[in-house]
Image (cartoon, rainbow, N blue to C red; front, side, top):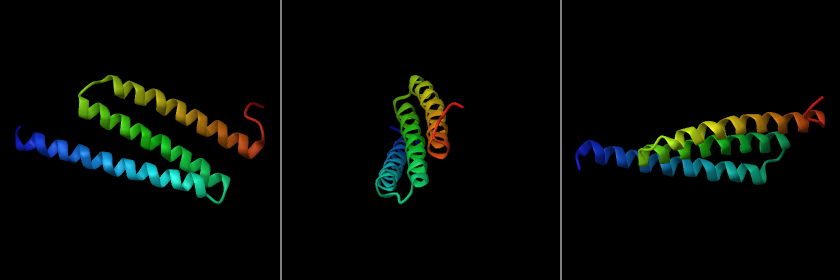
Length: 95
């Protein structure tokens, strides 16, 4: 392997570690969050971290299917966060 390939592998491993740490910190905020807004924000952050992990998995394996899955999860994560926030604020989702 060349030095560039080894450096790229090291960068991907470092990125996995950092995103995993961010995911655990978001999970802690989800559990101990003092308010509902903190929990909603932690859940949205966990979705973003999961998308980052899926993209990193796609980069490390060199396949494109993970990027499509990340796009679908991003769309579902956005809609579910907005729906949950509306439910908490107004008591209903659809008026």
